[in-house]
Length: 125
Length: 372
Image 1 (cartoon, rainbow over the protein chains, first blue to last red):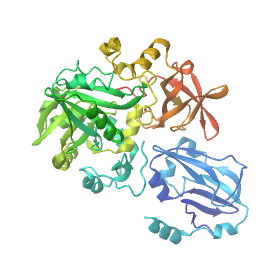
Image 2 (cartoon, chains in turn blue, yellow):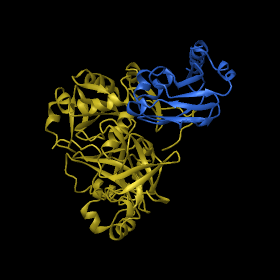
Image 3 (cartoon, one colour):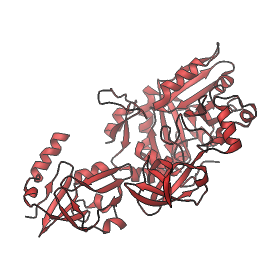
């Protein structure tokens, strides 16, 4: 299961083995514009689904990034400290935010798949 | 800033169709639909302005002419600026103050020889013009120029570009202003702006605005820029945004804008709020507007509380904050208690519950490069 899953808050999530990698969608990075700073959560933090856990700062504003699922933060993308522009250049790859150990894998199934997210974006346009 | 609900119909500038054609992202601002950025993005637009020339639509701003004998003296009843001393062909930055010594707006006033030309903030224009009109003695008339667009061409390439279609502008000094025909349109051109760069603000009739903007955009080095870049450019230049950095409660002394008060006015103390200004100049203001540089890369936004590094109660608040593309780092302006306002003073900015170390620094963050 390595396909991307999405939230209505424009985070994506991808299972890599036992952990889920989380970032913001291409749509989100495009809407934010140039990312200049990312405030990442502490490793080991237990988070609830929908809890604000990171902040992405563009030139014009700060925006919350929410945990798509409940679990424990096990890793953060330290490369973003040096190069926050990764979020713009490769939002679903090198621009990932954090990795989370899911508390309930069933929560992942409830997230939107690529097609559902595309339809959701269409409905928001 | 005023709040606008979804059902408030937004006004458009004469360049609305051009903005859409250029792919602008439009946002509500002071009752207008305005371009916040074009496809290039805020950082690219900002850097282009510092490197070449950026074209901004600022037609939402209020333009008016004050006509009649004694116009300058009449306007001085509402501002501490020296308007009577303004020579023909010259423009000046000033403040409209209230009786409590607060700032009602900041504005540009120019002497066009037979009349004064005013440019005020979009969010304040109704109030400003009502108040000015109400204060006029018989024989004077305030003519709002809702029929004119305002374009800003800013950057080190602005003079070269504009003078290729309007050779007269090359002779304008910084804060000089002249009426001229540009590409067949009657224009009022001032050498001024809101970016810290050399540049021009050009007032043209609405019906000529799009054609004129297209002409400028075809010139070498000229690219469009939106309100996003306008904000990061003005903050790097240390310039105030009305409603953020100055408002009806901040005084000219607290805002470090004492320089806008004419010498003659400081002898006569005959402007609204003179009592407070005089007292603050004598005893020192309670708080001062300062430049602030956070350590690291994290920006501190407007309304971030400011503390001393050793904790305790807040000593001030950020009024504008963001990331400077030319500075390549975070920057802010805000008010701090006078004891903490000296350059180099260490501060702690409370960003999302964490103390972000910062220092008071001199403004501007990026040196001005005005024409001499």
